[in-house]
Length: 293
Image 1 (cartoon, rainbow, N blue to C red):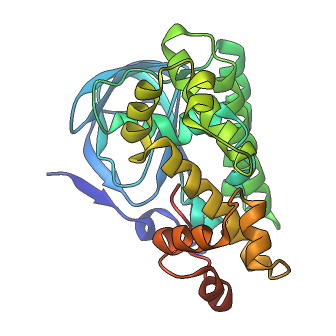
Image 2 (cartoon, helix red, strand yellow):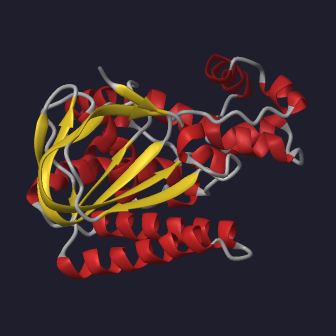
């Protein structure tokens, strides 16, 4: 039986879904799942990470993200010191979109968790000793804010979490391990799309940047995003258009061109297909539900 942990039982402050738990001698645990994200940092020792599909060894320096609803646990732990950072990024309203130009962010938060669900996946961020010490310092600052709860602790705790996520994403972007290179190239493609979605993007250009054939890139996109490359591009453009439309100071046609659509009618059709309503209706209703891209 797989236990289910719910936010209401984890976060003392329901309006602030963030917790940082350190386990100096983490014991074996059975499979469990939850409705929030869990960022795991192994500070010392070793063990095995277990999922519904498989299990694999983990050790000091390993960092990985468990997205909500993925069942996991630990086995054969030996002097394992582990930090669990539990959070709901949407409810915390973290400005993670500001990291879209960082390939390591895409790999750590989007690529790896989705590949891990499919099994036979071994790549993950492994910090060098110096970087692990720096991550430990950032984690300690986060823990102090959440434990002491001084005035302004929610702001400071969110800041420390963002600093940690940014630091880890940069570490991943700089990783030199051969097994992470294909993932990093794909992360670079995702960053390139985010930064250049208003331009004339083509599968050929994306494949060149990924050092893959067009067919290999298409398979990778389907495996990770469930979309074809250009379908993903459209999703990113629509997400950008949603931001512009909610500002209210730009005409729909202008927003379309600003996001890379040269035909406003085509833009409206794609917007309705993705969002479920026309651009005009969306702006009128002021919808703010997040778009999964």
